[in-house]
Length: 199
Image (cartoon, rainbow, N blue to C red; front, side, top):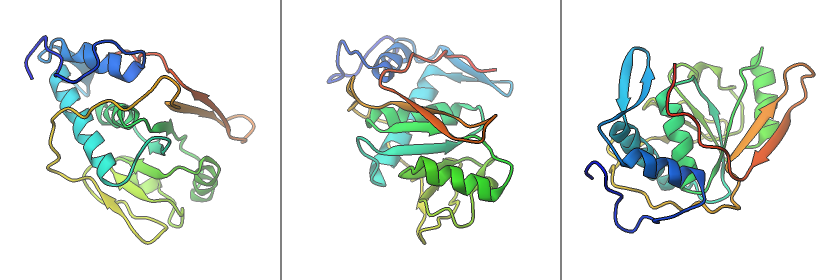
């Protein structure tokens, strides 16, 4: 892929945010897309990560209408996983960190995701008996209450993963359960394009 090109077969026009975001990033792959922890992530690097995660998620059975729960820090990999899931037409939700393992397990039970995605910084927060398949975006296996675990393939191809999302697909579930302790979720079919900068 070269700067300023959109891969053949990719929709020229689209009404879903993830396709528009990826198309915008593809216009100049050498341009800075994110700043994180003092380092710059280029558009090309972010795109490669998105498509690698999309292939990994697809490879472990994530499909349209799947729900991924992310226990994630504010980092480029978390954004890439969200974009990757939305490319497949799966939905994502970012989980709050609760005060105890029991509360985290309850939140997972209420959310009922098809997969819990953790990161090196959050793997320790996974309930021991959460009953949910778990994958780590940091390259390791976090474990699973169902007796199986999933590992991100380390050598996934970075070729473009065709966007399967449609305007009526659920994209993100925004949850809140702070002051009352009661989880509330709001689903968004077409979330706004998030800013391409991170502090």
